Amino acid sequence: MNAIHYEATKDIYAKNGVVVSAHPLASEAGLSILKMGGNAVDAAIATHLALAVVYPRAGNLGGGGFAVIHLKGHKNIALNYREKAPGKSFRDMYLDKNGNPLIDQVRNGHRACGIPGTVAGIFELYKYATLPFPKLIEPAILLAQDGFALTKRQADSLNEHQNNFKKYNSILPAFFNEKSWRKGDVLIQKDLAATLSRIRDNGKKEFYEGKTADLIVEEMKRGNGIITMEDLKNYQVIETIPIELSYRGTKVLTMPLPSSGGIILDQMLKLSAMFHLEKMQFQTCESVNLMTEIERRCYADRAEHLGDSEFHKVPLKALVDENYLRNRMKDYTPGVAGKSQNIKAGHIQELEETTHFNVLDCEGNAVCNHNHQRRIWQPGRCRPRRIFSEQ
Image 1 (cartoon, rainbow, N blue to C red):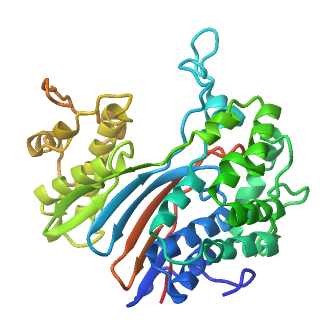
Image 2 (image 1 turned 30 degrees about the horizontal axis):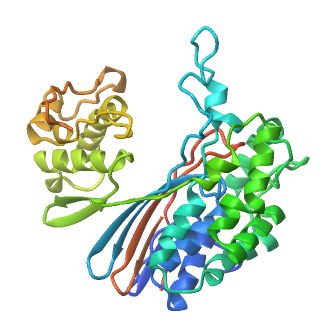
């Protein structure tokens, strides 16, 4: 597969390893590492870095995320490398003098940026890799330096945000084009290639203390942002233990708080079992109706009860209690569609003591990674598609 002519493959059966990501070139980067003898962590790092080039809408060096890793020998790890608030941030920074929310500042521009965690997360992952780091980052450097062909969706997205590129950047990025982008146009990102090359040569320190850090702080100053050199130097990844669930005899590992996905997954699995989802055929009206109504209730709970446990008291045990969950579905009527605006969070009476890309290899190692993003120009999120590469 080359960066000009490639196709997305949605379904593949593989026996020795698999890489699943939102872009075929990123999946191919990870697959090439598996073929070199790298493990799932090596391939995940290569995939992650390649996504920063070919899928900038969601995968990028300026964001953050979470990763769940299973290593052969039954060691399980969860990494929290999400963006963090700059030291100069304060509670009312997104409110005007009358207390009204400044929505544009929350979502767009320099003051919407958190301290990036992606690069630190990649190097935390690298502790469990086997190949030299320059091999893992090389596919991304080549893709940035030589360019890759845009899909129609990517071209349309770039065209849609041309005004934002001018509005929110003091220096126009490679995504800006005086003419409209078209499917098949080659996007070359020389500045990104240079940044990746410096990271290859100087490691994590380059991004948080080196020339790249200087460039970030300079851009922040030009755009009235508040990220400082001290913020970058002090950034730390948090390593913790994944949540372990059991579903129909299968062990499920997922991300703990501050990610809300793990708690919601626990709720949805328990509820689907209560209503015997396994007896319903895949994507029938019956099964889709059930899962839709389960998700309405779980996401209402997410909006009300879930948050960063360092700053917000989360009723974890109560949210996944089977009696609580059963009660949440009392107003569910099979075959009837509810309305999300009518579904409220469940009432929880607390006790005093209450306190995605994927890679698998043939050795049993697995990495599940979820990225966030806080880019100056990007005012939204993109739902990832599944693109498979096999070995």
